Amino acid sequence: MQRSAAALAERGQPRELALAAMLRSAASTPVDAPLDGDTPSVPVPADAQVEAWRRSAADKAGDDALANALLMAGGDTQLRLRAAQRWLGGDPENLAPLLYRGGGVAALLADARGARRFDLHMLDQVRWIQAALLRHPPTAAERAALADAGDYVPDEHAATIAMSLWAAVAPPGLAPLLQGCDPAALRGDAARVRDCRHVGALMADTADTQLGRMVGLDLLARTAATPAEGAEAQSRRRTLDWQMLEWGRIAASQPRDGAAQFVRLLADPSIRTEAALVERVLQEAGVSPTPPAGWQPPRQ
Image 1 (cartoon, helix red, strand yellow):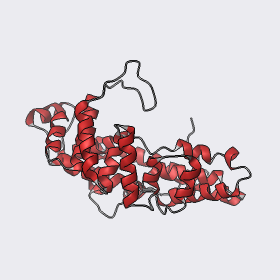
Image 2: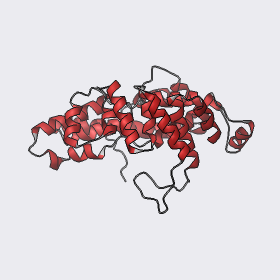
Image 3: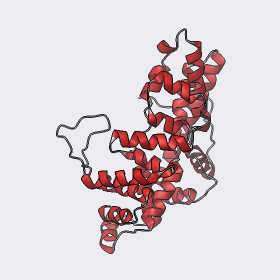
Image 4: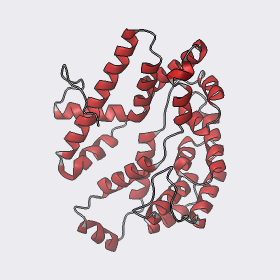
């Protein structure tokens, strides 16, 4: 990935520079690196080249939503905050960059009143990364090494790396939102209940990722004013859990964990969200998108 990163950076374009930083960072991250939020026992020195590429990408990104979204992958906090602000400036009705921008929960909820959707551009990013990687394919020696680990299929390999890179990006800061919409914080505050319920409905109905929908449904359950509203949120979460578990089961039953199907669906522009992708997988497998009566997800 180091060679691909350098080749991408040579183009000098903001998206390519941001992706180059992601690739180089991923290639140099130890396999036993701590999870986000954990403190390593030995400080990991910053990679000067990675930081230089990120700064250059930020300087050139302007209001390119995809470039700014790619910059959420890491680096200097202030750089990411400025990228989030640029993203938000070009897409003021999108809750995702607002959450990346952060801030106090009261101001966040007030600003969120104008939001109309939650769009991380997940599939847009994965598609673009896959295409960028295919423009810089592995060398013969690299392909030979990959073949030792199993079949090497170029578009599947690129899509798998693209998805892995996207999944490694920390989601926008949800902790302040969830704390601010905790039942204890909502007690006796009708305005905050309305604000939290607005965010919950927006995420549950419009999020382009399943995680976003899960968070939205959790907020809807917390802010339910009637037993019927609470039951509806629980029912929708049960359906989402069913779909995710069935998606995993179906993928595991296919060669290379369903990589060929994933690539084919990724190439379909009508599939714009993770939910739509999951529903298509279930449809092609002949699996109902709704769980059987009485089904409950396994809980740890």
